[in-house]
Length: 255
Image (cartoon, rainbow, N blue to C red; front, side):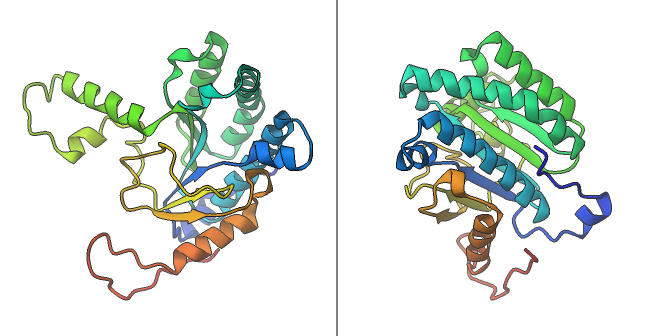
């Protein structure tokens, strides 16, 4: 991940982050390849290059949390050959990219049900998280074998089994939030989906109650830092009321 920039602590402190948490569905790898009469695998490899660009762009813009939807619980319905390739690509990416992430002070987390992954992949995930756990820069989260409904059911079961809460009843939103996969991050400010589809596809269902949405026809392998700037520019024009009345104060940030 040689394209990643290195920011000093002073530079990070100067960043005025307009978006604290950015969530993205990276859609369109297969169509990108099909449009060029290439195997879908090439599209997925090009998609990994787009991940590098977006990680770099997010770090430049002072984003604190970046959550990328890489593989959903529904993606197992794809052809077995493609699923196998995606798992292999995930493992290869972990091996090649994690030390570069670590050198750039980026913390990596993987959310989702790992129980179906092979032992080698699970070990690679654990090693990556341990290596980067003390980093204080961008928090990069990859959702793999993740689904919003799975996340909610899991959180409810954990909450009900928690001894400190057991039998109390009348649970609060804060009680449940503690057990969700991204409890460490604020709710996303902006959600981006590439590829032209306009739905959230079972991604962060609880967390995106008041998230602003940005949909683009651009396919994920073509998405770059300029694309990211356009999405954030659109976000800057919006007034977030959260059910209240607008204060009339515009957000300010340098892209």
